[in-house]
Structures are given as structure tokens and as C-alpha cells.
Image 1 (cartoon, rainbow, N blue to C red):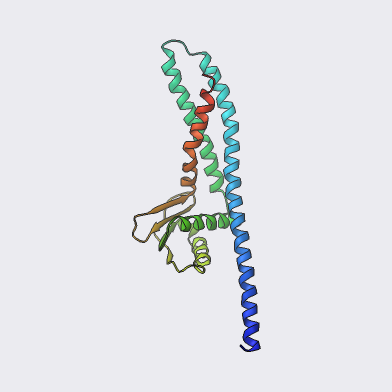
Image 2 (tube, one colour; image 1 turned 90 degrees about the vertical axis):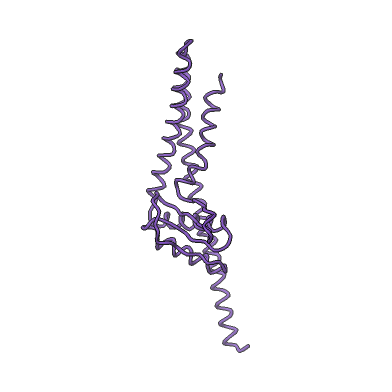
Length: 199
């Protein structure tokens, strides 16, 4: 190997190390951003939960005989309203991400979607996120032999991506709405548990 080739190999090796370090850093930051928003949603949920618990306590004292069924329905509606408020606020905050935060979030969501489905994958996203998602896929595609394409059949959502396997049999929904939906039932159970713990 000539000295020129040796120098080129060294430069390419160092550039690859820098690129890998930057990619790892960006991935960590994206995970941190998503985790922070999920934590923020849970904090908001706790505040609403405290207020809901106080309202439920007042409601419980008013229950008499045949009014119990009506009160129970009101309690369930109160739970549903509380959960809805938390998720509407979390979705609003995620929807308001912009610039670098949106780019990092989309990179993270793309990475998770690609890890969820093996083989060749088609990624769907919003029209306004197309270029950012395409860029994220190009970065991940450099390290894999998989065929990953971004569809121009845009989806309607507040943000995020959906991944579809080559045969169309597997769909991984990693939109903001789907991510929040995955924790929605868990939070609803926590509300019910807290509100009914005194019964």
C-alpha cells in the first residue's frame, strides 16, 4: 500500500469515527428529547390526577342509594376527561416541536421503526416531514443492506412515522398519536387505581 493510500485510509477512518460519534450523540439527544416530553406529560398528568382525586372525593360523599350508579358513571367520565386532557396537552406540545427538535425526534422515531421491522421497509410520514425523514433514512441506510424507502403517500398525523414491511403484513405505527396511545391505557389504569384506592 502506498503512503498516499495509507493517508486516505487514515482520513476515511477518522471521518467515519467522527460520523459514528455524531450519530450516537444525535440519537441520544433524540431519545432524551422524547423521554423529556413523555416525563412532562406524566408530570402534567399528576397535577390533573391530584385535582381529579379531590373532585372524586367530594363526589363520593354525595353518593346515596340509587344515585350510586349515576355517580359511578360520572366518575368514569371524570377519569376519561382527565386522561384526555393529559394526552391533548402532550400531543399539543409534541406538535409544536420545530427545527432541530423535530429533526432529532423524527430521527429517533425512524430508528425505532426500522428496528421494529426486519427486512425491506417503506416509511410513511407527513408531507412537511418528507425531506427530514428521507435524510434520516439515508443516514441509517449507510450501515445496512436493507432497502428503506420513503413513500410519497403521506399520512395525516401530528408528527412521526409509520413503517410498513415489504409484504405489507406488518405495520409499525410510530406517530406521536400512536406513541401516546401506547401509554394511554396504562395511565388510565393508574387513575382508576388512585381514585378507587379509598373504596
